[in-house]
Length: 228
Image (cartoon, rainbow, N blue to C red):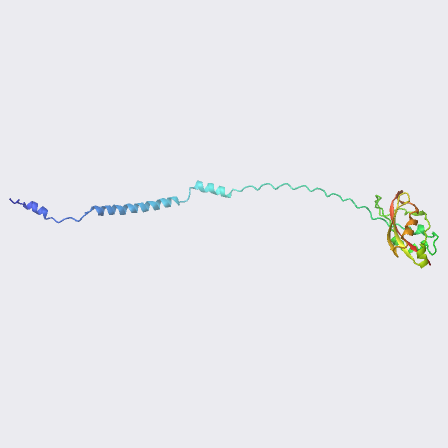
């Protein structure tokens, strides 16, 4: 038996079908667009709020801190300068002592030898006060000979007619004795040195004086051996 379909049911079955999804996707898209717009606008407002100028109190506090100056530290104390030490003055240069006036006119008993030959050698006679503490550069009274042993002219030089000279350095003590004799120069060498030293070692002197006291001096003397 075939079922009969009523006209109402037939009309219901004949209505066109609605598209899949219907109006719900449209509503969802609309809300999504509105929500995105609100989110973007809110984000911009938040960013603008953060970038706004700080409060007046904060500005004043920061400005006061920026212009605050630190006082410079006090300068270190200047070191005291010590007064310069006085340098001790060096000992005076030995004075020039002349024995020519004391030796002039003395006969040594040698042929052709005369103390007057020493007159032109005055600049070669030098006193030395290295062993004496002095405050002046000269002695008040030079040493004066009181005894001179005669010199022997070397026989070999006499026979050959040899003449020459010897320059001696004499250390005359404060008592007038010869302490040292040194040969500084001899011409010719090896001829007259021994004779000159042997005789000069026996000489006696009145010592040099400075400020009323006897002093030790060096004296340099040239002795000539001449047969003329």
